[in-house]
Length: 124
Image (cartoon, rainbow, N blue to C red):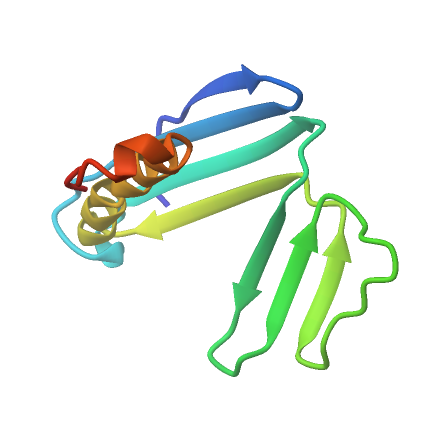
């Protein structure tokens, strides 16, 4: 894999979240050309979060940083505690482009935290 310069920043509230990101794209094509885009979240303290990975078969693996008392996974689920870091690697130029375009999700979060803005018909 070609190297990727990754920059990181730590954000603190009642929890501490480190975010790292970087890309070496464009590299001229698909994953075989060596383009990689990295997005990483690290629990540096106090994070309550889950990551749910679902396979084509419907099998789910749920990673949590916390334990829910009495929680029992369904028959198609595996539950793993102690989530510390999530690293997503996208391979290829197109994957980098679509991931960057997905920044609309950040706008959604901001708007949903201020419901009065939603009623104004803001274009996402």
